[in-house]
Image (cartoon, rainbow, N blue to C red):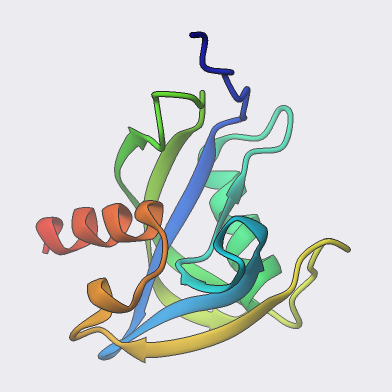
Length: 138
């Protein structure tokens, strides 16, 4: 049996913390059959670096910018059937960058949750792994 390989561009996940609150997004995901609670994230566009994608995604999904960026690590999302490689960034010194600019197919709502207990509230493995990298780096 051959498992189909999903060709997927690299992506980014952003851990953005303000005080004791984690910046998250709630969005509809067809595979989950409803909404999920995730870290801001997205795929790299052609010719874009990972840090450029992280900056763009934080602005598009959350309407935020950051003064400081630190790469926390990277990992394969689901190497059994996908080529997606995820770059994780810590965004600090957050500021309002204006309104979000979502793609037509995106249904994203900004949500801040308490950092304590956040791992148990996140809905997807990429977000859980990215937050674990951030917690390990503290």
